[in-house]
Length: 312
Image (cartoon, rainbow, N blue to C red; front, top):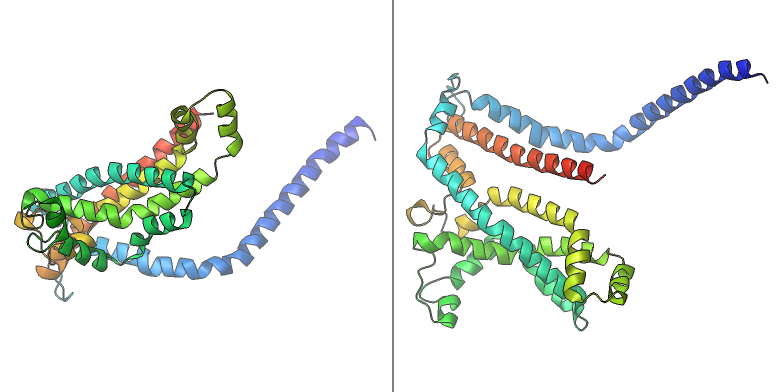
């Protein structure tokens, strides 16, 4: 076959191969779409539709009955930006997040290291560290409400304290933080434990042969290998902590805490919507909170992408 003939046939083959790949992708989507359709339907019903409905209501003065709503434009958003209670609630959620995220990340890592390297009773340690995460939020909240009770609680009794944990604004949020650490650390612990088990053993063996001690192995092998999982843990904890609600409300007997010190953003939204019956205004501050959460998630994705590109 001459060179000219080969040159003429090559584009035809490439075109045929591209057409075949397109047909296969189209057929794969047609068959796989039936498997994805139930999820997409539920996602549209319980996520997309409520979001669009809330966006619409945020431009109205709708009440909880949904009747007689009129269009008010950006009035709800203007009021929200001037609302000191909303900013206080956002500050409480941010303060809670700043306390919980670093503590739970360090605790989860240390517990995972302990459960990974301990020899005897390994399954029992793992069970004990993860078990609290399986409890419902109401159970965890009621349990620690009793432990922090200033008169009959075990915390003050064991440590010889007289601290009004749940009735003083200086301690109320700290009590919620301690409860959250005990209750939710098991999830991050499990992520770290799985990542530790995935680190190749020969890296540690080679480091030992080179004379590296335990500290050097952790700093130069363990922590770099866990960098991605640490970023995931931090991102998940930030998103979860900003949405704190259950345990704070249960521990404070469904109130905002002493002088409103534990009123979080989610709780304030529910108060406006279901206590003050201002559904339009509650929808507006919900949209503001959604934008904040989306910004955090997108910021995490941007940082991760830049780090991956920088490592190439």
